[in-house]
Length: 139
Image 1: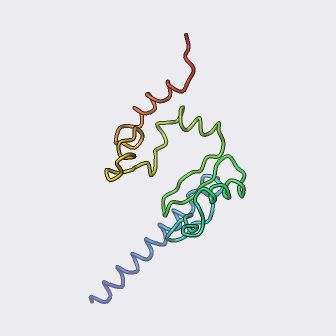
Image 2 (image 1 turned 120 degrees about the horizontal axis):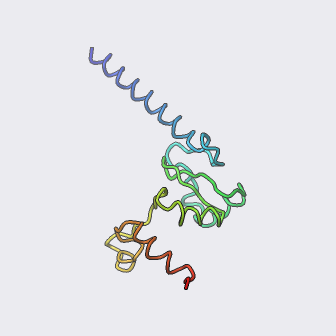
Image 3 (image 1 turned 180 degrees about the horizontal axis):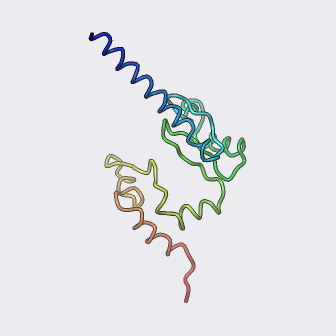
């Protein structure tokens, strides 16, 4: 009885992982975004320990030559934006619809831990402080 119950649990778990994998791997395809195929564990980060991330980004830009490219940070989707117009829309107009990733330095870094852009304050505060400083004054 326990063997049957365990088999059913394992079968359900394998089925769930399979459907989750199919759903995640189709994320960029459903949205029509050019992307790299998803690696089961590392996502698009299979270049680690072999290439510099900046060199890899340049290769992605040259390979796809599109305004944006979908990548995977493990199983989480991320977008590389290559177009200044789209970057402007994301950073200014559609600021509230996009969230930052990996913008944390931690308390162990004495310089970066107190940086204006890595402290735990709402992104809207940064936007309202930094955008008026970078636009020309209107008198």
